Image (cartoon, rainbow, N blue to C red):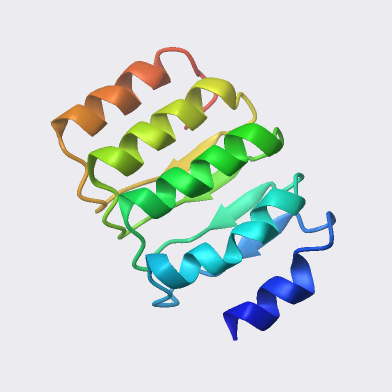
Length: 129
């Protein structure tokens, strides 16, 4: 299923909203979707909440979004095991995305170091609600 989804959408650049929330994809399977985020550089809303993602998956996704997307408006990670790795990746994304105004990261297992990283990033980005 995910392979077909990726094949169908990795060669386009017209996708602006992706909501795959509430699918227990898991991090290993989610990595199959990465080519979609690389080619679709105009994504405005991305909802990966409740997909059972870990911090390393979040790190890979945030790296792609930071490098190739400047239109991201909404990012939802709710109920993911982001921990420090994912939180630090989100912090790096926040620093460079002034278009990002809605970030949902509750119930993500973010520890003190990850929280500090996000807090410091928010000092440079006043657009996020």
